[in-house]
Amino acid sequence: MFTGPSIHRSLSKWTCVWVGLLIWGCASMSQMKDFTFNPTTDETFPEAEEARLYQSGLGQPHRVIGEVLIVGRLGEEKDSLEKRLLEAVRQIGAQGVIVVEAGETVLEVGRAGVRHDVSGGAATDYRIYPAPVTIEEERIYIRGMAIRFEGA
Image (cartoon, rainbow, N blue to C red; front, side, top):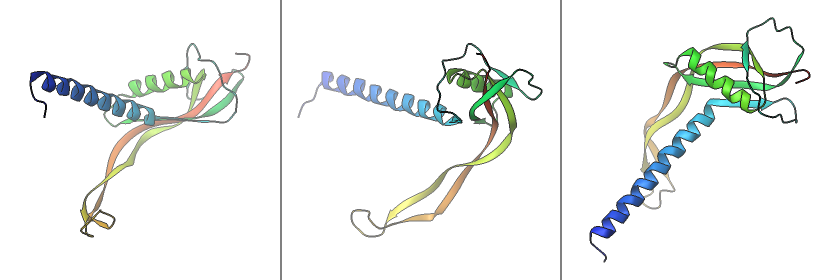
């Protein structure tokens, strides 16, 4: 068996690399889940230079290119959530979002319980004990329609 300082340093370096990649991957995935875009057209659009939020009274001719939803943690500032929404829609080519609904909600984010093997073998038969508990979190959200202005 190999031992010595060089092996330990090498293992330490690779462990740090893998842990860093895992943390980066988890952070990336959680950001992607916060924003959803359901297109209403097959067209794709270039990234917009800027995007704005509209509550109502939009006078310019426009067309809806999809439905959008962004979800944030309850403690997040509304301005921060709006900025993240506008950056995300700008990247898909929307020049604005007509806000349909905004507020607070409770989302199921997972289940907790301990898995127990009752088959005595390869864990093909198991039971969750105690009974699984639903984990819920309060969140804030903005739901709206992504738009592009006619002639743009």
